[in-house]
Length: 227
Image (cartoon, rainbow, N blue to C red; front, side, top):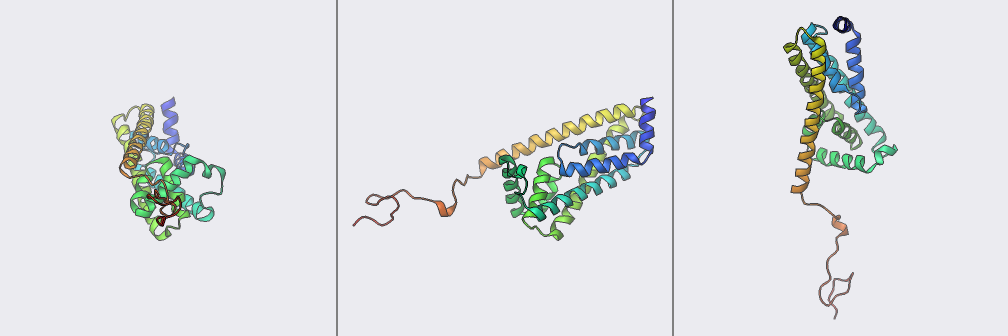
């Protein structure tokens, strides 16, 4: 009975509608399980034949692109300090990190951030707030959304192909795999960030705020020797 119900849901159009809605919300609210929805749909596509795998990829890619473009537009419109949560210390640090990365190159950071939930939100908002040209941001965002959708769908499809006679098990295993891969990506990203911080010397003060130790024969705040 549960397997028949799952097959019925997969046959109808509402599964892809739900995937689109969850992925779109996931681009704005990182707690929404967009990755899980795409992976589970990919598992159903392989295990039952519905929905078509290419349809899952197309819907997920479209929703991801729309969500990323929406975040970019919000950042461009209101900046990074309009709402209280934006001024939280950890969030402000994420925006600062995203700004420094975007200043070095747009394509790499926009593409890689698509695979890391909170990083993509910070990067997309910051890209809009710092006026990264839309003609540079949107094509990269479209490519990243397509790659992300294909990656998540193929993971689910691979599991579904291994369990063609057990669609419920395929969905459960694909959800677990999506969670495990997401956690692994977060751990790797955090480790790379810590490594980069150890290699890069800290900037405790701005160049204009530097002070020097007074030389012998000078007072604090003076640079000329005492006559």
